[in-house]
Image (cartoon, rainbow, N blue to C red; front, side, top):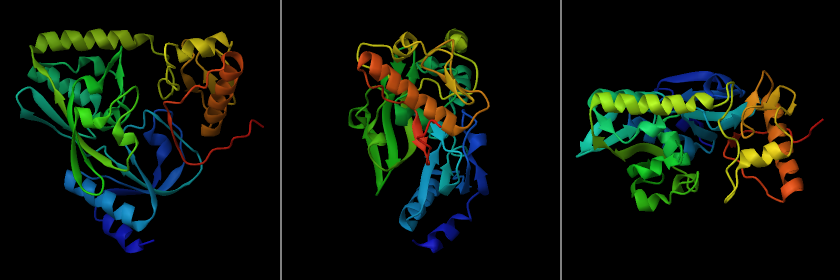
Length: 299
């Protein structure tokens, strides 16, 4: 473990005793040692390299919209992408977004400049880097549909074209390798500001049916040919909860934090998985990413 490497990082913008609960959409999570905020790709690479070589635990955090973070102390560090922002026209009908660019910032850029093709992402509380990592999307469309290439750093700088990203349902190759997503290049179409604004409004309106409350969005992936939410609902689990976590009465694939703990949410997820497997023989797979240690006990 090389503490010298960690000391170098304190030249970056950073926060000691970083509160993860204030940086996840679940509003849950404990403290960690520190968070670092690279503002450029060079700083991001430096932070990633120093932490990796130090042997310390760390993870990369975007908007925290697809994570359940333990309330226990995370004995490690976080690289936050919230300052790694920027959108650049890098080719004919191509936009390159640094990984910390939020969906709302992307929508504002495309609306102002009359670029169409990204509107289906409107309203998703995520960063472009996070969406690329998870191959996120909405309404049957995914970022892989418009992704030209992704620039990542692992042992060295790599540029993956769309085919090399191994995109699938809630999957990309970036989930299988240790790397830092630096930027994503998207293919767009020339349109008008008015048309793009109309499209964004349409997709935002479609999201009004999403359950209210603190959540990670859909907890489970849909099994082949099935609806995870429907399976949970048919187990009679709408409204079920453990502690301050509850399966949404509106949509059974959402588990809401109603003032509970990360363990409450974790136990509720595990209970739901067990009941669906008992009734249907289907083992649901989580979309949500777990960070830290959780209590498996229901007691």
